[in-house]
Image (cartoon, rainbow over all chains, first blue to last red; front, side, top):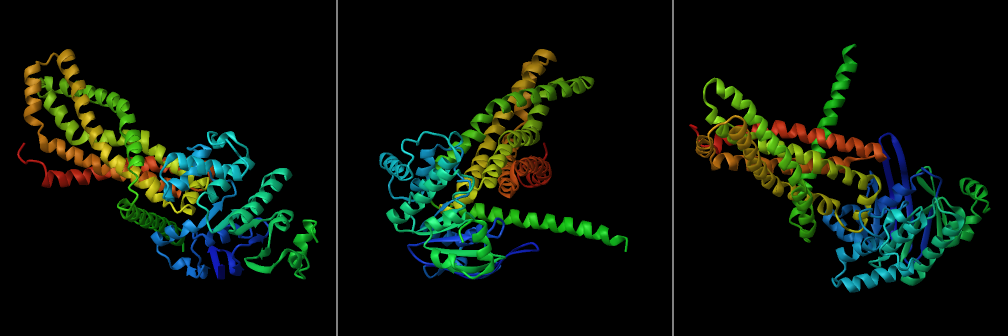
Length: 244
Length: 266
């Protein structure tokens, strides 16, 4: 369970998060919706401790991550996997080396053959078999995201964070990524947090949808209840997305 | 009232400089704090030693030969006025070991390797690769900075030693073949005046330069923001700050070495 309690964050004079409160249940997909620039990514970076809040708490499985030392936080992050908006693959490594990276760093397995087998298994899971020797600049945006996902799940994390996983993708690739998010959920039973402004995609994958508006969560409910929300901002967002 | 904008301008500049200096000191603390943590990442250290050291050999060889040669040429013409041409070897040897080799080597490594460190880390920063490392529970200072900084610290003395040797070879060629100085006095005065303290002092300086230039370059890379322009800015700042630091630090280190290490009276 991830609890976000009264979270505030400003950058200079810009007050981005103004008291965010949200509970993210275990083993479910929670989608945080909101327009571009509303602070969704900032919120996600708080969850994994990349950004320190001005005030408020992030409690993950009973641990307040802002009270951890740098070294403790570094160890704590092994519970997480994160897919970045632009995949953030290491451009000096091949696809296979990217996926193997967390395994080499953290798994107890040191046998290169067994690591290669795990890499192949992860790439198979994201429907990219035999892509180990390709370089990140030789593959498409959708493939890069899938490689990023394979890297994120390589250590079988408890929590998976997706930062705008479908942004910039064509409808077919968007559907592929949505299916992957769901299949990861079923295969690994992880807690997933998806940051998105893609309403259709959110309704496809979510067990719970939260709406971030002007630095606060204005609505949080399962998809059907979310659709019926009386909140004006939610209705306006759904109308624009053709989902009301 | 007219003074207000001026004081505000300087006040802001001072705050910015102090803020950057504070961040750099935190960065140095992180380098030391992560240096002794496991895994020791020896493979990355050796890879960086190859990049900083082995791949700089040609450029150091070329620049050192011509530095020694031109210094011998200039000093030879001056010493001819006093009939002291045989002092060319000793003069070049002492200048190289004490000053020219550590400073020029550090400047060349800044241009060749440290600029690349700043650009590479800066590029990783703006494309979220540094954040990706953090999310995978790999500390970026531990993975990217520690091997680079210690590799540069270790390799600079070797490159400086190479600079000393090839610089002397350049001086020998010019002295013996162009200025027609006798080999005997050239070599014997070189041996007599250049001793272990000079060489050790120069190597110590070069090692400190190595630590400082690599730390500055990695720090600038870490500070990079706002895409390709930010990476370019970080690289420029890394080269300028490293070059200035080498020359400023050289004065203070030389003062300290002359006081505590060099043998007096020569």
